[in-house]
Amino acid sequence: MKKIFGSISVLLILFTSLTFAQGFKVKASGEQNFNFADKGGRNQASFFSTTPLEDIRGLSNDVKGTVTFNVSDIKTLKGKISVSTASIKTGIDLRDEHLRSGDWLDAGKYPEITFTITKVTDVKQLADNKLEIKIVGDFTLKGVTKEVTATATLTYLDESEQTKMRAPGDLLGVQATFKVKLSDFGVTNKIVGQKVAEEVEVSVNIVGSNKAN
Image 1 (cartoon, rainbow, N blue to C red):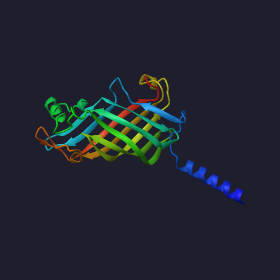
Image 2: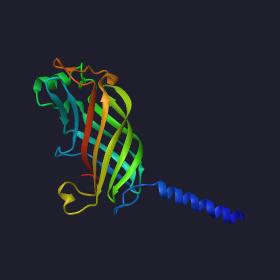
Image 3: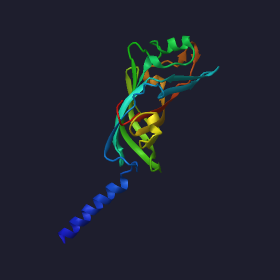
Image 4: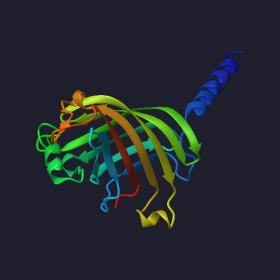
């Protein structure tokens, strides 16, 4: 009888782990490491806000970082993405200078803006190679770290002749958005005299490879 109950317990544990582990159904298996270094500058991070006169969008192509995860269980996702503070451009030189100043991002003192992944929740399988998830992480801006939650879509592409045109190895595409309050990070919501929205939307659109260049 004990052996029967023991066997049932093992089966329940296996069933539970298989039921709740969600990941990609691709050729690769096990733990994979993706590097988002992009010499071509095609990876992007941006922020969007509004003023009474115009919308403001800041854009950076200097995005880097790495993530690791088990292909069959996306909840194992860990990693860190960073953006060079001084690389953010808004399309107007004077405004960019103000953006890098102490009133705003203080690029001299805080050269990087970072997002460190701490947890993954709400996994939805959109396709064998595509997942929608919530990524909880520590967002650090101007020396202040706050927990934020991003909505993200992850797409896993097996290496092919087409993907090799971008980079060698399997590719991971990440599109994510989240919102932050400027006051939480000691940032004034005025830029060159224009009052911007207190809440700013941050977006990331990046592709990484599991084969380092």
